[in-house]
Length: 263
Image (cartoon, rainbow, N blue to C red; front, side):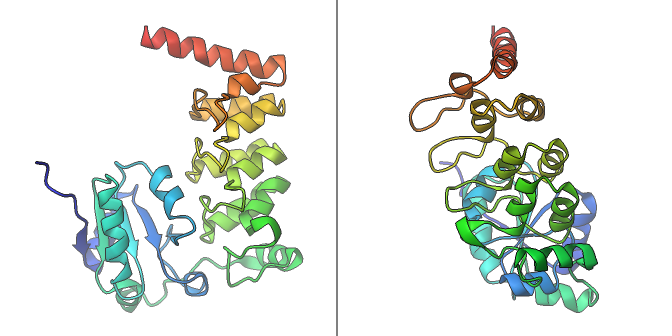
């Protein structure tokens, strides 16, 4: 019988050493306003809304550091990640309060006049980067759809999550595919946005791009490692949905390469 996986407790000093190694995903479960005021660099806000996306979209080989207010909720989340198969999971003892006592200047990056002005123009509060507008659109989703790569990068730097989903189960990368701006796609992909995330209908970004004939987007997603074999709830793949000969050729090329590699 295999021993049950469990998370590890970690104090602030050890957490600092862990972060210095690089490659650590930091998930902070405090409320949006508290997170916006101050958080550990590179932290992503964790909530029940994006928990599934983070569990599915984060490589299980990467260390995960869970942070909350005082170190209680992070233990619950830590066990969830451990149960899901993550190899290295830590809960910060004392939570963010303990961290901030030793790092009093820890704070979210300054939003700056450009990002603050953009949020104001779009009707979003500057204190909550996960605020939701109509159709479940967060600031990151709206900027991604608009193809504003500079604002997308600024939002991610300030702590906006690339994993949050709207009412249809789509995340920012899907909206970026709608906008078809390749620079925006690159920013989100580098931020770890899940390439193979499937929405409520089982559709992926690659399926959407293929079905709308956005061959440059299809090429970008395939180059980043998107999986063309996935299928919707109706059993359609990206290849089945290809709307143009360019998209069809790109997908068939990957299909042939995969078949040859397996053979």
